[in-house]
Image (cartoon, rainbow, N blue to C red; front, side, top):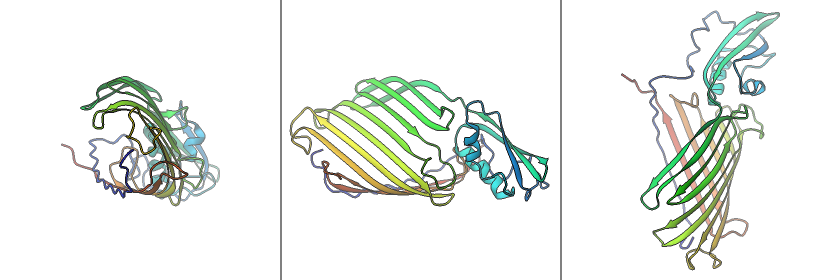
Length: 295
């Protein structure tokens, strides 16, 4: 857009989460695991129960415990943390059974509804009321991916789709990607022109440790004006691709966190590959989650 200077943007966010009840028990290891729990025994088998939609192999991939390795208190805590981080279970329970030369680890889960239709609503002073259908899935096709789509009409026309792949332990590029696209048609009352914009976002990431990961973020923004002199390009359309690196820290205890840290540090260059505009962007997002007593 016109008057788009080279800029440095820094954003810091402090978030506090209050929870009167916990859907998933994270810490300490729950009461069904007494002090006599067979930590140190080798896990010979993992069984998953109650997963009507979620793929069994995905549950196993999200666990720290592995067949052929000793069962430890640390792996038990991480099993809860990472399975809870999928955001697709309302309860998670573990138990063990003795088998030859070790134990069988049984994971019993209860799932959230995998598909949720709804209504998307937005109210702004500039464009008024926008309303339309929406669809979301916290467990798309049983892969624990978060998918959503919406369309809104009224003072402006908007539609978009999004898919976020689940975060799993390990150092594979096969999981942890995000993609989203949004289209917007509205009247820009501030600069008095009709605006049409398209935004595309793509992210891939890889774990460094269990709590730390890095990756790439690509963006593409296209803005069209029906009035001359608004955009940087004289053809009344600006295309601004961007590419950046990010480092992400996540020690939260579940998808419904009551404790832990989240941090995201990202740097990006916009206007690369011959696009319109030319600027760098730096974002810092820091959050601390604290349990608050209720009642």
